[in-house]
Image (tube, rainbow, N blue to C red; front, side):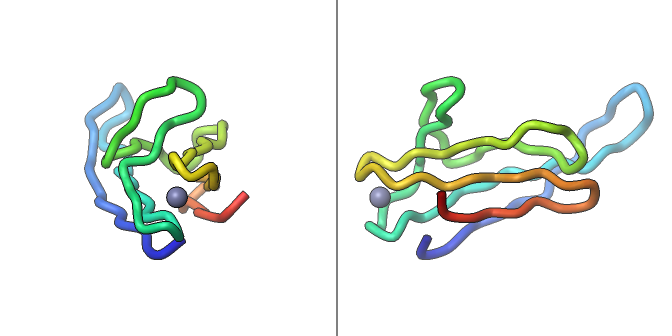
Length: 80
Ligand SMILES: [Zn+2]
């Protein structure tokens, strides 16, 4: 990937404030607004929270894929 923009946003839930991130990956080909594989939706702001289970796979129109992998305190972003 060329770059990753991560914006911290906070949400109020039943247990108080919990961290949430909005992630935009710029692909090697220069495009962003990648598509969430699970929903088919393109977005500049893919929401993901640490400690909440499932990976999110982002797909570029050029075919490259990237994984957002939530861990307990942080998010890993990697090429697939
Ligand atoms: Zn691409």
